[in-house]
Structure formats: structure tokens, C-alpha cells
Length: 136
Image 1 (cartoon, one colour):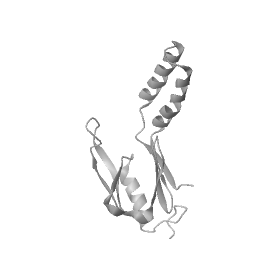
Image 2 (spheres, rainbow, N blue to C red):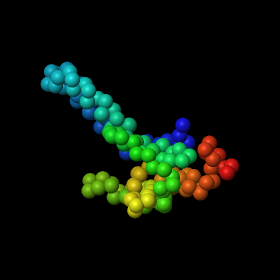
Image 3 (spheres, rainbow, N blue to C red):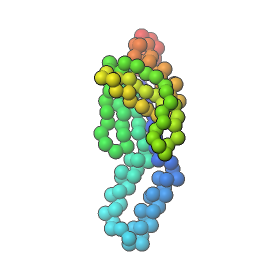
Image 4 (cartoon, one colour):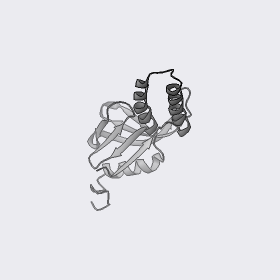
């Protein structure tokens, strides 16, 4: 059971439902085969976005399509909030960066990155127990 979980980088509801509507309209008009309904599952996953789950001993990053990544807290060397440009067509914003062993910097564009930084730093410092309370 995770201590906390957050979803981020989702499709906007307008884009999600527009995609569903276009697919259903194409089905009703006979432009695509009924097997195209299988495309609703990956589209639904994209609509849910990335998810970050915080556990007492590790973090899990769940991308919308693909396999989850488990990061033990022992591999996290630094936690900081920095500006993330996010690509040529995206609007930049503050993001949480995890500095991992081996020099990798993992950007996580979470909502309220400062609050998540403090939460992860508290876990790294051993200020919280497995239940998330500040008793040890």
C-alpha cells in the first residue's frame, strides 16, 4: 500500500473525449473495423497519465504505456525542484528532479513539486515510518 500516490502529465479531458468521439464516430460510419475498439484501452491509459507512488523503501513511476520503474530510496542521491522546459512545443514549468546513482536526473513534473520534495526528503532522512507518521 503506497504512502501517497499522484497522477501527472495526463491528456486534457477535452482531448481525451474528442479522441473517443472520433473513434466512435468512425466506427458508426463504417470507416474503421470494429477491432479499432481495442485502441480505447491505450487511449484510456494515456488519459490517466503518469503516476508516482511513494512507498517506505522505494518510489514507483508508472508510465501510461509501458512498464513501471521501481527506484529504491537508497539510490536517490538528491531531490530538488528546478525549471523543466519539457520540449520544444511544451510550456516549461517547475518539476521535481531526482538525482540517482550513476548520475541520472529523473524529471517528474508533479503538481506541487515543493511539497513532494519535502515528503521524499523526509523519507530519505528517516523522519517518517512506514505509515507516514513522524515517529521515527
